[in-house]
Length: 64
Image (cartoon, rainbow, N blue to C red):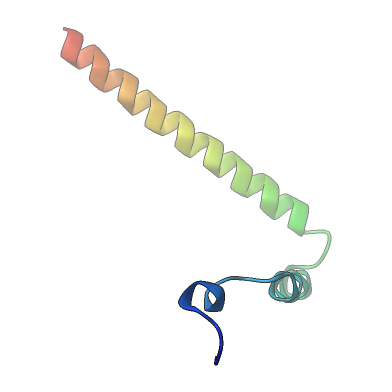
């Protein structure tokens, strides 16, 4: 790694992203990837909703 700074050594380039995408396609298959992404999206939405719900509940307790 001569000539690379610590910042450059930790970055992911387009070649690495392409390699990761190929490995994911080989592992899961092209038909299954949209299902996986949909599940991840739903999980993220539920997590955001849950964290917002806890915040509003805690504010209600403080006001009472």
